[in-house]
Amino acid sequence: MLKKASLLLLIVLYVSGGINHFVHPEAYLPIIPNYLPFPILINIASGVLEIILGAMLVFSKTRALAAYGIIILLVLFIPAHIYMIQKGGCMSAAICIPIWAAWIRLFPLQFLLIAWAWWHRK
Image 1 (tube, rainbow, N blue to C red):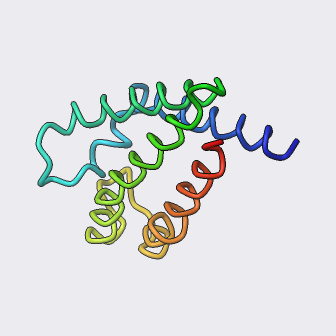
Image 2: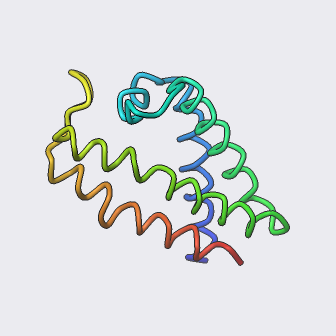
């Protein structure tokens, strides 16, 4: 029962998070490191991948592939978290979090999200 509830929450998290990339791109664009080209394309690709991977979690045949894809995506997001730490947590006037919260987003939150996806690979 716990694992089913956890899986449902994971699906909702990634599908809604992916949709949010399109509804509120202004929340994502400032945290894309400025050394990466095409931030709008990166935001769109991230949103599409989150939606697809979240939807793939629904089906047992694609669940493992989705979990591994989410793990890869989370690893690819690490530079954004490091960039936020380098900027002191303030990416724009609208996106400004305490530096300790930026650190928590990277350690342990990012690794807990990876572990969560790993748990649902089977």
